[in-house]
Structure formats: structure tokens, C-alpha cells
Image (cartoon, rainbow, N blue to C red; front, side):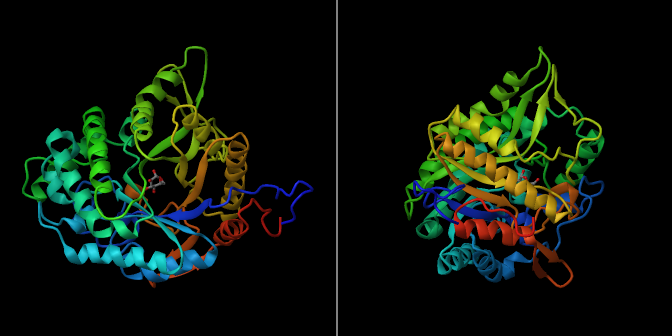
Length: 421
Ligand code: BGC
């Protein structure tokens, strides 16, 4: 790309900008059998359309996958370490599991990829669910101890870390007018899961009391961050927030109340940390009471979200109006079988992000969700978010044109026109 007469490359990103892709342990590793979600996937009734099973077998194929990410041109890999493997029984830590994650971090370092590590991406050990999960404030100590152990073992290789992925999701979901989930199924699923692990309760991130969970998790975030920073290594610790581009609809809309309930407590927590991670996929119109569903005829993704690449710019501008710490885009992407629409989405999102940078907003990364087509929680394997397709019979990886497109922009450190457009 040619510089203009002032020496500026059009669409260029700042030097040192991180370009990456993300995954989460439960969604790609496979056989996360000691986790709460594995139990929920296998009880009857269940909300899960299918169980995760081998997923992308990333537990065994991580070295190849990390080399593939690097060969695309990306310089950052965001992944999570799995608490259910690291502490399979309360207070019993697996050195072998920690060594596994050391090997993953080492594989990143070998190919000059910066690892960004999430310590908690929705899944917990099943024993933690038996304690009623995050609803009991006493469990904060357990998360802090796990975070401390893991960072002591891994910290010297970590580039960046977040305590949690999207801890505000339960609060965000409260605004959805109709989640399409049967409360009766939830009730039976939970009680059968509790019975399956021989416990009285089954507390899980997705299903708990959102307010109680938020209080416990915020307190645990600050303590875990301090513990993580006191160990080996010296890496920034933040948290990643689920965000939508919240748009007011009608004079009596509740957009500001929604933002103050769903985002502000977490943006405050991030502000007292080293950075905030923003994860945005779509816009959301907020009406008088709740969210307003997309108009009939609007283009929808496989998640049922409105196709809205400009969401990232809106979310980043909102976050920038609230925080003083640097902003990292830790997730952005689209569920579609049509990879051309993913390419358009990436181009649109990055164009908006570039406008934020031009306006002086301190954004330091663009990390795409996801590296691989993977297990999309209760929706199973149908939604396709990957830059790379996975044949789940053979575990073969097939790079999509969108993967090559994002990689070429990472190499150029600038927005490019997609080839053949
Ligand atoms: C989560 C991912 C998820 C993605 C797409 C984010 O909410 O962090 O785990 O797969 O969005 O729905």
C-alpha cells in the first residue's frame, strides 16, 4: 500500500496493533467432561441442541492450529484456559493440565504470536456448580485461588489476560423480550444436573440470578486481578464485556437505563483494571420496556441477530465515553454460511474501528471471533463463526477466504479491499 504525500498509508492502523482470532476452551477443545456444561449437555431435558463431544479436538491439535493462525498473518491468539481441567476437584490442581496450557503458550511464542488468555469463559468445574456457582459470594475465594495458581504456573508466557469473558451477559439477556427458552426445561435441567453430580444445587453462569452473580463476580475480579499480577510475569489484566450498539427507539425509550444496568458496573471495574475488552456483534434498538426485535425483512445472521457491521464502532465509541483505560476489541464476528458476507462484515467493522482511531480513541486490537467453526453453546455446531472451517469427522481444517482476507490486512496493518471485489 502506497503512502500519500504526507507519508500516511490510507486505512493504516497504529504500529504494534494486535490482529488476532479467538476461541474458548469448551467450544473447541473437546471432551471437557469435568465441566458443568458437559453435565447440562447430557441430562434430559436439556437446552443444548447437541453435546460438544470432540468439538474441534483443539486440545490435541492446538500446535497445528496456532501455526495456521500465524501463517494467515495474524499476530495474536486469544484463548481460554479451562478451570474444570486445572482444578478437577476442589483444591486439587492438575500439574499436567497446567503444563498443557504452558505448551499452548509456548506454541504461540514459537511463532511470535501474542497470547491473550481468558481465565473464565463461561464454563466451571462441576463441583463449583454443586456449590451453586456464582450465586454464593463465598465462592469468590475459590476463583481467586484458581487464578493465582494458574498465573503462577503460566504467567511468564502470558501476553495479556482477562479474568472473565462477558460476565455481563446474564444482565444483558434480561433485556431480551423473548429468549425463546422454556423455564420449565431450565428447572428440570438444573435439578437433573444436580442429581447427576450428587449435589443439592446446580449453579451455572448461564442460568443464575444475574444480580447476585454480578456482585460476586465484580468483587472476585478485583481480587483475582491482584492475585494474577502478584505471580510470575508482568502482564496487563482486564476484562471483556459483551456489548451491543445500543440505539434508542422512541421518546420514552430505556436505552440509558439499560446501559447503566448492563454496562456501567463492568466498565467501572475495567476502568480500575489495565484495559477493557469490547465484544460486539450487532446493534440493538431499545424501546420503552425491553429490546425491540429486528424489523421483518432485516438481514439476520444464523444467531438471529441483525447483520450490522457498524455495531463495533458504536460499541467502541460508547465504551470510550466511559473509560480511561485502553480498549482492546477482543471479539467481533458474524455467524453465516456465506463467507462473502463475513468478508463484507469484517471490512465494515474495521472501517468503523479505523474512524474511532482517527478520532483519537485508544484502540489496540482487533480480535475476530472465531478462529474455527466451533460449538456455539446451546445452539450446537450450526452457527458458523470461523475464519477456518472444521470437518468434525476428520478434524481437517479448511481456511476460508475471510481468513486469508483478515490475515492480509494484519500483514499490511491496514484495511484492504477484498480480492476480486
Ligand atoms: C462469546 C463466545 C460466543 C460468541 C458468539 C460471545 O458472546 O464470548 O463464546 O461463541 O459470542 O455468539
